[in-house]
Structures are given as structure tokens and as C-alpha cells.
Length: 197
Image (tube, rainbow, N blue to C red):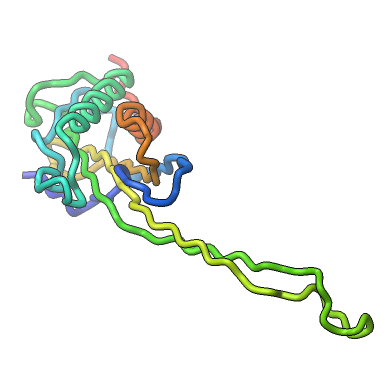
């Protein structure tokens, strides 16, 4: 059984924006076990048929991901790892690396305050001290920040050897397929390539 709590970093992904219409760039990070010898890894398989973060609990669950997006995400990961020289095998116990992913979301509020400045001077010229502050405007934006992490485990030791994650605040109009492809590509860019035979 894989122990997912060790290097498990919840990474950001699916989100719905209520008042923010502009898209933000995907932010990615990664961590790896310095002791892991990636020259020994040539094959990979998925840990299981579901994400690690209980994604099937319902559409209102923070870890929910639709069946179609699950397929899109797995295909994108498969394609990227194969392009790095890895061979996919059917079962995790046959692979060098066991791959998993998790998703989550968090509701956030962003408050911006802008001060209105008038050029009216209420005092005689010799007592002037800059402009006269007439008030401020507060803009409150509510949004959901999603998370996605992709994790690789050494199949023999069942220890996490690499974790990559990304975050993004999205518009409702974002294309799911395009977003998944971009996120997976950016997350796995620093993933070490398979050794040449």
C-alpha cells in the first residue's frame, strides 16, 4: 500500500471565478528525493483507477474531478512521460515508478482598496500639504483556487521520489482540455528523463 502522506503536496488546479474574468498564469513547483536514483527508473504505471484525494465523493467535494477530466489528465501524463523516454506498463507492481495525482480547491477572497485623491486644497497656499484625500474604493473579489499535484513513487520502497504541483485561478470560460494539457506539461517539465539504454 502506498503511503501518500510523506511528500504529498496538494497542488492547485480546478477553480471557478465569480467576479474575476481575467486568467492568471499557472504557477508550478516541484520537490524530489535527493537520494532517489532516477537512472534506475524506466517504466511507470498508475497507482490505481482514482485520484489519491478521494475525487469521487461528489461534484461539490473539494477533490472532485469529472470522469472526462480524469481521462484527459491521465492521457496528458502518459503522453508526457512517454516523450521523456518512459515505458508504460499495465500494473504498478510491474513498474519502476507508480504515478498518482490529487486535486483540491480552496475558496479565497481578494480585497483591493484604492484611494481617491482630489487636487482641491482646503487651506491657504502657505499651509498646503499635498493633495486632499476625499475617500477610497474597496473592490472585493471572490474566487476558488484549484490545486493539482502529480506524484511519483518508487515501486519497491513505496516512497515518494518526486512531486510536482501547480496552481491556477481560472475563468469559467477556460477550456478544460487545453488547461489540463498546459498544466501537466508545465508540472512535468523538470521531471528527469528516463535513462537511455
